[in-house]
Length: 204
Image (cartoon, rainbow, N blue to C red; front, top):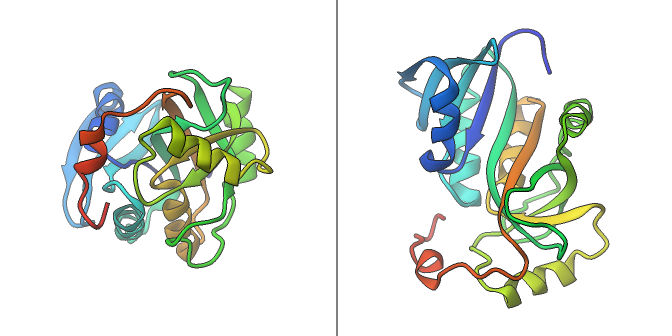
């Protein structure tokens, strides 16, 4: 990771950010970036903790606004993901080595996660993965199986989320390096209740 400046640690939802905030020291709300954000110390490092909003549109817009802070030297995109590989259980920590480039919100291929940061995260025990970013929740086993079939050539474990590709695209505009770390919330066979998928506005 860069040795100077602040590291932005971003999640989609405040609920995903809450465990990080509970471990941070001296967290204080900061104004201005257009997202729910806090200055804090985490692991002895100055960090900006922020929830950008969920879905590709809100995630890209939120991180872009956050990166207007001149001292941010890198970001970590964190949160939950659904497994698209059959041998991955809930609670598995995944680190993206690559992204499956497809979908209506791509608008050109984003940069890959920073290779040096990624290798450090993998050395700490994360499992290498390829992330597929989609615009709507993959709620059923059939939907996840269809996504899996469409990206079977991707390396490593496969997982699906709604923000990773958008975060990298926003960071690419400012040349900000980043890494993507996700915890599996639901296995390939596990289905998400229908009301969760329905509780989504047009922007995610």
